[in-house]
Image (cartoon, rainbow, N blue to C red; front, side, top):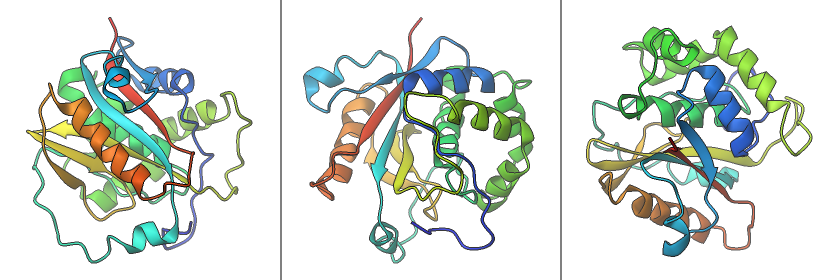
Length: 230
């Protein structure tokens, strides 16, 4: 789905696979006590299996052009000033952008080392606007190389950067008392209403169900949770 204008900068797609994603975030500089795990279902008893504390869910879902046409006329939302939000300017980089949104918006809980790859990137972004944050990622050779390294691994054969991909990652994170959806191809984060650390998983699961309800004939949905395991 061609959702970005301008000359294409393309990366290889990242797989929604905890093993691959955990190697990736470790190389980025996320403490190894924080790990991605599979979410096996959205029923309450399966959600209870998600390790706590959980700071983010990342949803992989199929997209169409209609999906992005639908939000063009949405009114601008009230969002917390604490949010880290970046636009996606690189095709197939939605996996990395989903990871960055998850980590950046929970960095106080996670404890990011400012000298790490991700710590330096967040510091360099500083007060840049969302578009300039996206452009900053285009020039970050360290993140690009780590993405390429991890995207070439996994259980499925790595797709070439030129491949047409109709799957997309979004991150769901609770920030400042609200549940936010972070999608680098939308103009702003989406505020899905009030939430707390205690209700975050259930609240995020509700949003995931809404995504699935819009495309009931699709089975290509995958969810991973970023939790503290140790």
